[in-house]
Length: 113
DNA sequence: TTTCTGACAACAA
DNA sequence: ATTGTTGCCAGAA
Image 1: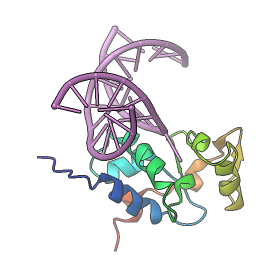
Image 2 (image 1 turned 180 degrees about the vertical axis):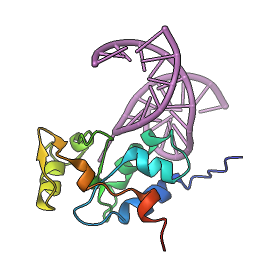
Image 3 (image 1 turned 60 degrees about the horizontal axis):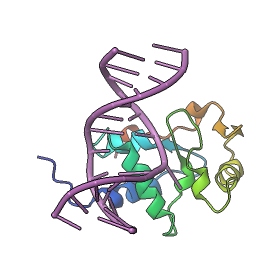
Image 4 (image 1 turned 45 degrees about the horizontal axis):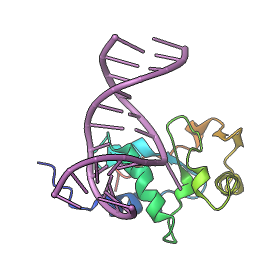
């Protein structure tokens, strides 16, 4: 029984909006938090639609290795990196340096409270 | 309606 | 270690 009746996008948006300033998370982490660990792909797809909306910090979502795979979907290929840099996230060659110290896992951070 | 295609990630060989 | 395949869901053609 997997009743996912089109809530997926909204869930992704909800989680993405909760990512704190200067922190990042991954597609897989969000997918896992939504109980669909194999649908990381959909998270990206959702964010693609989300970026047309306004208040969703899609730039704070990267792939598991810290690579900014989604940067090509922004206004310019450097927009995502610039946004993250402005939040204090160090990036070298399209990849976050030591992403562990910025990583924000919804499964952990949202467990409390 | 059917088919294809995605900001990924886990697994098999 | 690297390459190819598969799962996942929703939207566009």
